[in-house]
Image (cartoon, rainbow, N blue to C red; front, top):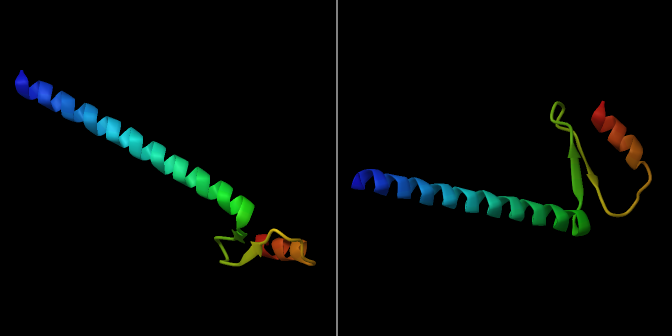
Length: 72
């Protein structure tokens, strides 16, 4: 019975560690996303063609046409 208790405790500790890891990963990705949305540039990439366009924080002429070219 002692081995079963140890195994049960080990599973509980591993499960708790997994939850903490996943929560930390989620928080890191969320903070990074918000930071990049405020201070950084987004890159729109078409995975089929490999074409990409950088969407900066400031407007520039011809951006809509570049996006349409990427999405084709």
